[in-house]
Length: 281
Ligand SMILES: Nc1ncnc2c1ncn2[C@@H]1O[C@H](COP(=O)(O)OP(=O)(O)OP(=O)(O)O)[C@@H](O)[C@H]1O
Ligand SMILES: [Mg+2]
Image 1: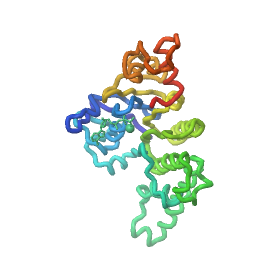
Image 2: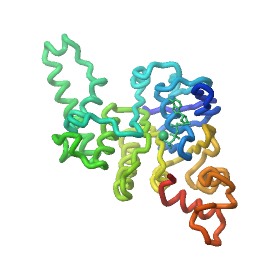
Image 3: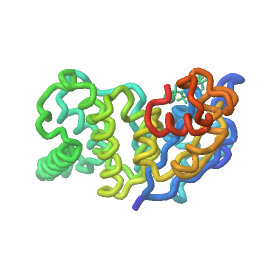
Image 4: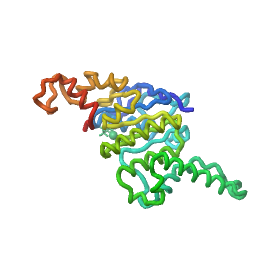
């Protein structure tokens, strides 16, 4: 079973710079929850605190009844929390299949004694079968033997997503899963994220600049600006929120400088369209 994620008053300071400032919000179990905001707002820092890569200076994070803050990153993985990174991190020289198998090693239980009785081979077969299932789910079946270096950019992003699924997570954290993809690829990966949530009893937290994907797959959206939460609600609520509109414009919401000048529509509508349709950066 997945669990509720609670971020309670979290601040992260880097030698004077406040990357996160008293951030609190809740991610309900089984939901797809987006974190958005302008460049440098603190989104990746937040994801890094969720898997204990960055220590929190103040506040705490709870996944179900377990406290994440203060754990070592490998212990966080043991709670069933998996993530992907903003920059692609796969072993380019290895096959797609081998990249996916890396995700299974944490789950292998067979020790030396078990291996001597042939349990290792049976377990290995089960692991390989599961990897094939996940690859099929991610649309990578035909590419299992290819070296990762030969994959298209879109397939690499899907490989990263599939590798995170291979950890059988209860909480999946994705940093810009569709960044750099074309519109069709982005829509397809967005559908895959929703399908994974439905099929695998997952809670998903993702950071994304592609507002088309955010608005179509997120159940709820938290908006950060300068390390603070400025809005938290349904996609429809946040895209109409004046403070969110102001943050994306980088100034006065009533004066949308540089945004398709000359229109007579109110600024809030112009930005709402931009938040609905396309990447923000
Ligand atoms: N390890 C670090 N050491 C020092 N400062 C950091 C570190 N990580 C992030 N920061 C700073 O914290 C702030 C927030 O950065 P972060 O990467 O979290 O933003 P972001 O919202 O993910 O931005 P983007 O949309 O560009 O990916 C920035 O000012 C950044 O320079
Ligand atoms: Mg980032």
